[in-house]
Length: 146
Image (tube, rainbow, N blue to C red; front, side, top):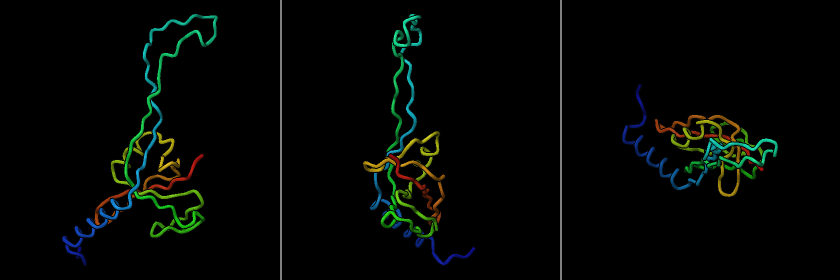
């Protein structure tokens, strides 16, 4: 199929888009459910003394991934339409745009919350492909949580 853009034009646009992403990216921490690690499985309980007679033989290990992404907060955080996505953002809702490695981590298992700065957000959408001349990013809609 014929194209109005040459291959070199497309590559230049893609490089500019990557520069845009790098310029406006923010640190995004994706939190997963912690892993429960058992330290001693052969502890014998002393029955008749309640639950506290058996010492805790496990610890929780936090699981998170740190990624970069562009965050779109919308105007005034009031209900507004966001660009070509043609979706509305209500107060406390944002869009994030991330690369493939962040998408894979977010989609792998349960993601209780995503931290951007000092704010915590929960996912309220699945990933949406954002194709720019063959270069892929993925967007998610998030809602501020307490």
